[in-house]
Image (cartoon, rainbow, N blue to C red):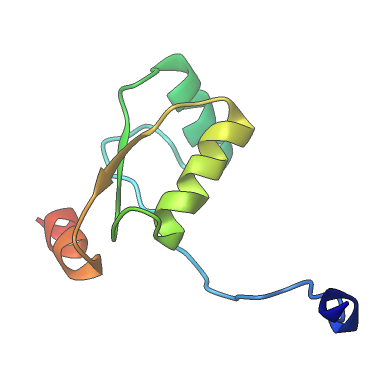
Length: 87
């Protein structure tokens, strides 16, 4: 069985991510962001570099684990998302 020949792998990828919120949002930590999202359901959006991207999957995991719903806004790559973020 070829599967038995593989050693267990704990870390397949290391890709640090940064969470950025607009300055007018009254949060200073991830804990505060989750509390805000719970108090304001369906009022927050987040950008990603596209469907299935690390940002998309990570934030959907956050949604699931924290019991919140932050709406996905997919872009066609990091460049367009960053341009809108800075604008």
